[in-house]
Structures are given as structure tokens and as C-alpha cells.
Image 1 (cartoon, helix red, strand yellow):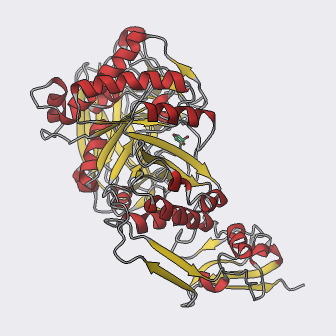
Image 2: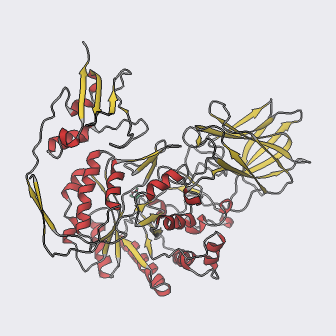
Length: 632
Ligand code: AHR
């Protein structure tokens, strides 16, 4: 045999935490709006601002449009006529259609439109007010980018000059992933619109999340869900939304901004350079965790910003408010319905407590002294009121170094229960650091590996992660929880890669890292069985055939290159007829490597590296490579 695995008879290794493997959800790569939160209308509330992204205006994703010679003017306005103090900007349509015709705006959705499926129902709603005597007729027009209808138009009449919510179900008569939605109004006068929304009725467990994405997460059987960030939590201004001081943008993520009726959730700049609607907020995170059977693990800002912005608050009142917000968060999750925040949870539809047991304070702070001083204050206040809650600390942004050492020393000295570590590294690092936790202090704080990934979405990365995870599991007495990061990426809006699950308007697929995570996550053992492996070291084997792996990348010299499975199915091929040298994937799409916008990641370089390192052979990989040299 090539290998012998010897299990030590009677030996008992450490117990493995049932919730060892989880997921980390952050609204990055349009993971929330345009992703898990399935609102089909982008910028539904006209709140996009240059403060979110220099390219944004109140009309981002909207185009003025008309039918039947309709005329008017569309502008976004923030004045006293606003929907409410937390939802300031609205769309003002000055209509000029005395003799017929309709004027309004069309929404472009997320990825060249949005997806609708024949036979399914979508709930359209809008807040409106009209100063026209007798009201303003509104048509809701469902057509795709080419103008072809995907549903029958619906008609509403906005009556009265006070904000009223109107709604109508829209049943798709056709499937398209290039859907558009137009809201067109007739007559004259001023029509004000806000919260123009189109939501699919078919969602994961009926709880309002995009079904295919949520199901991909559910298939991992996560033990916990860490949310909402990441850098997203801890950066920007620490101020809360405050109507009196106008509308602070780029304020840190604060859970109270994200709960209650969606039209009262004050949108905010997202750290990753866009606007976040908070349609996916703390209630939805808790509900999703419950639906997954996973432990919710919220991260609250520590008032010391990391992620390249080294700044700590020196305002004790502000710090106290954030500490109080965290206590209120625990009450929101666990408190009786007679309590202030428990009542809100009930009013939102969940009288039973969510059973919160862990809260993490901060993310990747670079100022160890400032961070830790704040952490201790949070921990003290939480322990005094909720002694059963585990308060998770962290070790800064790196896998080692001065900040890391300093924070670990402080965490140890203060008897912290659990420390969040983060690192993104090369495959070689992961292969070389399998023993990282073998030497960790068994009596010190436990490790929560809240973010890690080998830095690409290629097969070699996934293999390195799998190898590394055996080291996590071997040290299950120290490493109690681990989550790959980030979780999601919308192919048209990528701020960070690698990512676990990729998607566009209507499709989603797991990377090879997803398959690795799934393998481990759905097979969590009860305890480690000490074992020893002996056997030969694999030596590099040259690939035989018409073309070597390293030549694939420059395969323009070939007429036809294909990769086939043992069964003969063509997995990837390129005839280079366009001269571009891009791989055309054949099903199963994305199963072999990361898929980006161009779907061209058969991972030549990584495979080549593996072959050269002797870790994999063409036979191991079970693929046949075939290429035909270009004539001439
Ligand atoms: O996962 C992406 C980012 O990586 C997170 O926001 C941050 O915590 C880390 O630096």
C-alpha cells in the first residue's frame, strides 16, 4: 500500500465542538443587497449618495422613461415632505400629461436587470403621495431589457397628499434574468414615491431570503453564523443615526439601525463602497441562524477602527452608548416580550427568544491598548447583566506580529474565553502551517478562527485549505470554531476574492473551497482519533500528452484544447476561434475552480504548481488533457 494509517488503540483525542464549522456572512461583494436579500429593485429608496460611492446619485439604477408621449421631470429630493426622519430622500415626479401618456422611471436591477421565473409571484409595493385632485394613476410595467413583457402591467391610483403604502402582486408570465420594472404615472401635478419594492414571494423557509443562496448555506450545515462583519462593522464614524445632526453617512454598523419596518431602517454607506439598505438586518440574521440550526454570533463595533483606519474614540459617553446598545442587543435576542427590545422582537414576528450565547466585540483592531481597554469594559458590563454570555475578543488583523502578540498576551492575562483570529495566506502557508495550533497553550483562551482562506479560488487553494483543516480538527480542544471567508460574491460586483459561493441574478455555484468546507462541515466527528500516517512521498510525474499544463495558459497556439473526465465528459474546452484563449466551461459549471464573470478558471497555473510539487498527477486528477496543434 502507498499509505498506512495507524490508529492508536484505545487512545482518545479531544472532543470536537458540534458547532466547530460555521459561516461568516458579511455584506461584501453585494452579498446582502443584490444577493441574499432578494429585493429586485436597486436603490429602492433613492438614498444612494456620493458619500456611499463617488459614482452614485439618488437616481442610480433608475432611468427616466415614458410611454405614449408622456412627459415630466424626475428628481430626488430631501426635504420636509420626506417619508420619515430615517428615510429622507424620495423621488419627485412633476407630471405633465394633460392629454394622456405616462412618465416615470425604470429600474435596472443588479446584474443587467433582475431575474423572475414564470409562474412565480412577486410582491410590488410603493409608498406614494399625490397632490393631484382625484389622485394619480400609476402603471407598474414589467418588461425585460429588450422591452418584452415578463408580466401583465398592474394599475394603482395614488390618492391624497400623505404617504400611503400601495401594493400589488405581479405574476411572472415569462422567465428572464434581464427583468426591469417601470413605474409610470399619468395626469399632472406632483407625485412623490419612495420604497419602490419588488420582492419574490418564494423565499427560503418563507423568511425573505433568496432561496438558492440560503439553500447553499444550509447544505453546509453550519454550526454557527458570524455576522454582520468584518471590516463593515468597525469602520467609519462611530455615531449612530441621529435625525437632529442630519444624516451621518459611513457610520459604523449598529444593530438598531437595522431592525423594525424596512422603511424606517436608515440606509448607510457600506465599508465596501456601496450603499446598504439594511433590508437584511439583525432580525433577519437571527432568523436565518435559527432556520439553519446554527448558533448566531454577532460582532459589535468596539469603537476602535481597524481595517486600515487606526482610530479610537476618546468619548466615554459614546463608548457607554455602544456598550448599552450591546446589552440592548442581548435583550432583543433573548429578553422577555415584556422588555423593550424583546417586545420589538415579538412585534417583528418572533416572540420566542433567539437563544443568543456569544457576542464578539470588535474586528481586526490595530491599536491593541485602545481596543483591549474597550473590550474589557464591554465584557464587564455584559458579565454583570448577562453572565451566561461568552464575550469573544480578537487578535488583530494578522496571523502573527506585534499587534497579534500584544493582543494574545492581553487576552491570556485577562482570562478571555475565546479569541477571534483572521488570516488570508498562500496555499504554501496553509500547507506549511498545519501544525500551528499543536503548540497553543491548552489552558489559555480558545481559538475562534473567524476568517481564513487561501488567497485564490483555485483547486490548489481548496486542497491547501483541506489539508489545513485537518490541523484545526486535530487541535479541536483549542480551535473551537472556524469559518472560511468571505461567504458570497455577486459576479458583477466583486470587492474581494476568493469567495465561497458565487452567484448572478438567477444562478449560484460553490467554489472548490465550498466543496471542501461542505465535506468537513457535514462530517463533523465527535472526537479526534489519534492516528499516524506512513507511506511514500509522491514524486512529480510528468504529464504525458500533447500539451503540458503550463502551456494551457498560452494555448492560443492550439486549435482545440479540452479537459475530459474519466467518463469522457468534456469539462472545459476552448477552440480558440475567438483568439481570446478563454476557457469555455461545460457542465458542471464551476465545479473545478472559481468562476468569475468570464467563467474561465480552469486553473492552469495552480495545477501546474501541484504537479511540479509532486502533490498531484494527471492521473490523480482524473482528467485527460488533449490539444491539437494549430495547423501551420
Ligand atoms: O473577509 C473580508 C475582510 O477580511 C473582512 O471584512 C475583514 O475582517 C478581513 O480583513
